[in-house]
Image (cartoon, rainbow, N blue to C red; front, top):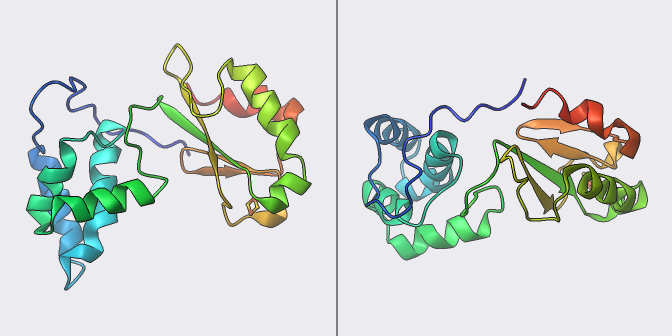
Length: 171
Ligand code: FES
């Protein structure tokens, strides 16, 4: 049920960036689905994120070269798409919906309870590296507000009192 980061390839941000053979193979596989390589941009970024937990700066030119598009264009995609993480994140990412329907169904209380439970503010990672807490716009589950996602798992409606039990399985 929980998302798994497949393998940490390289956490040394100062080392020159290289796509792993597995990443290259998976990006080529994604490219094979589309006549225009641009269409594979997001999936290619997701491949790197799945293996490393985030997308380091050095990955942008490496992926762009593989796809055959300008690095600036891929950087634009990576910046625009909020589910591509450009900084290291915790083992699990909590995305709490701050859009209107969830605002009306308890977002403020849910956010405050998450902040109190985790001891971090929005945008921060717990000291043990277990969770990153991020706001996100509508998760497409407005009838389940107030809602949040942990990795790929949607939860809602979530009451503040449920948070401890909700987080427990995410080690
Ligand atoms: S407003 Fe929260 S899921 Fe749509």
